Length: 147
Image (cartoon, rainbow, N blue to C red):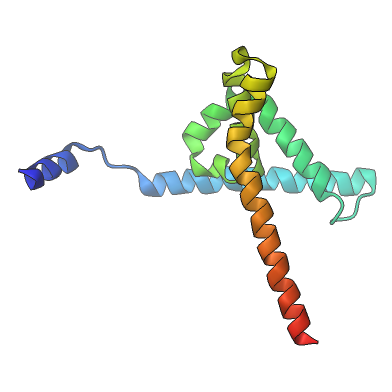
């Protein structure tokens, strides 16, 4: 009985266009990265930043653009079409934070916006901090072993 159900469910489940999804994700993720590269070159050319120092304002501008597009409802449509291509870069993280803030703003500033927004950001911040600690520790061990 169970195998018949699984067979029937498999027949009725719509097939996902995996190749098309991958191509759209690649294109949109690439375009976001290309936009970031353009913004970085803008900061280098017009504000005298070097390549290393231009990274921080570039990320800030990308986050601003993503948050603005989220507030206008545009980024969600991009995300529906592009899938992971819009979710992986820093813009996807900004979108998830802004979406949570917009969705829960009626609950108030602290408990609504702040609380719900950091339910998403908290795990990312913790993972980033722990990963940075582990990588730094491993690097230190290798440097000490090399001496």
